[in-house]
Image (cartoon, rainbow, N blue to C red; front, side, top):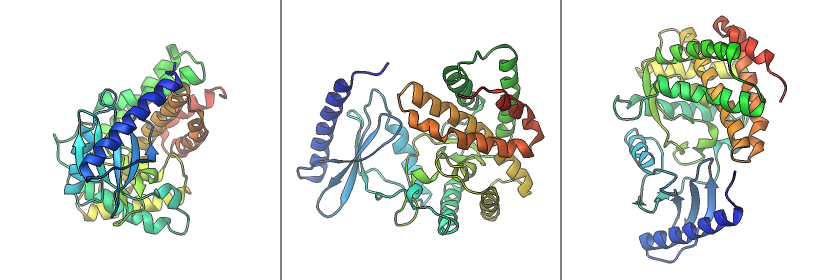
Length: 333
């Protein structure tokens, strides 16, 4: 059940006024924030004109959001030489950060068939920069528990809540077998820093290009995760032959940069296919959750995209035959 709208508005307005006062103290003048963006969390972003430039104020209610991972990962990306927002000022008690303005256009609105090769080459280079500085014991580990917790979003929110199925007996056994295959392949890969949402919506048209945002959930885990996330996007699809060409480009550049990638592209593609299947199932569950828990049904419009991604890898990976049978058996929503 959602809180009453006027309560949300009152609290949001109060926080916006407090953010404006705080930003004004940092820049030495009165300022008014204009909405810049919001994401699926409780974070909000406002753009402030401070005379010679614009800045971004992040409002992250401390009882619902923790700014510390954002600050930590921003530092790691800066060390990697990637264009990501640095922290100009912070107030963790209030949940406020002041950041540089990365621009107003994401790659989701910029990409097209003419510029995709050029832009994705830039994204590949930025991703390799991030992965090259990876070290263990710096970020949370993308371990078996987290992989399985993400996978459970699919039965909990899509199968049970959206389709009304009972996930027990033979269906539960079938899911467990599929999840075992995906988790084993993920854990067998080399580990690097994983953004977890390295996709066009989180890449900004910036100088240098791209500007990387929304990185606070980064972990240390499978090297194939971010490449497949980049090319099998939640909101834009590409022909499979293009995806394979871009993945091979990443693999070649990554090998040249001495990243811990398989020596054969086919082995890397196999990793990508099964890692992608894990992510696709997770995102289907997340989109169903956003619909039924948060009252935002529009995300479900992109669910067929993920079923199409899944079918592509089911068709070329015999170990995913059980997943294919499960998907065929599902009732129409």
